[in-house]
Length: 136
Image 1 (spheres, one colour):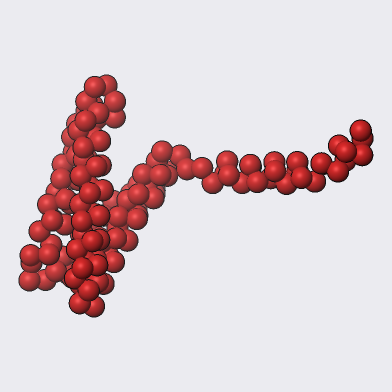
Image 2 (cartoon, helix red, strand yellow; image 1 turned 135 degrees about the vertical axis):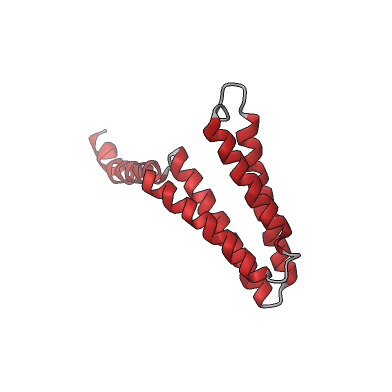
């Protein structure tokens, strides 16, 4: 019986190491939120690049994805008024911020300076991300 246990020890140890690695990779809610916002910023920059390269279909897909994420973030904040995260002036301000970004992203494709507008929106979001990262 001892031999069977000894034979399993390396596999068990490897399994425990893998489990510990997964546990370390799990993000806190704030880290997950930051990752989402940074990804959104990347999507905006990708939309800018797609526009600059004349790939308007890609730009529109990325623009739509950004709008969907911003709408979901705003809806989550506003819909949490039942005692959840949406209570308070800070939540109202954050919902307003998401609404502002949503409208800017929505109108970006109709501007004369499409690429520059995507860049400006991404920079605004990047400043927000830097503040979030500093608060972690």
